[in-house]
Image 1: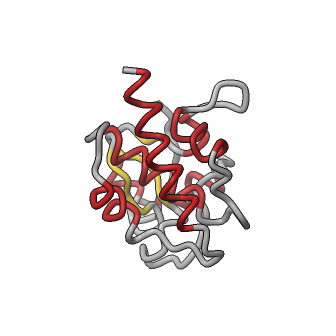
Image 2 (image 1 turned 135 degrees about the vertical axis):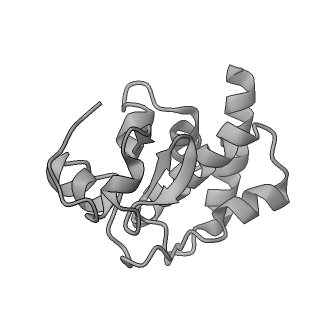
Length: 146
């Protein structure tokens, strides 16, 4: 647990980036539309740019940095590496967090469920095919791990 002194309405994203110096969640649109700022709150993918720090008090928050390490990546991170699902990388935080949130709830999602989970994640580079392949691979890795 970490405690910070901030105004209750301060967006969680600002706390994560400015106070905790975490670089996974990105400031994209600031309106909760692009998904670059996604984090897991109690296992569900949410947009941290529109969520106040007061709203997450006493809740579990996991950022991209909290999933795994370079030496021991989370299965979703490993899948994105294996499938080379990155171009500029700006959307990756949101894509990985959204995929992780989906797989926490459903380790064997259908293609439709994967697409629905990623539908609100904006990728401007057009790596959608690789991202979908990475999400499918992540599901395989998660099933193998359980």
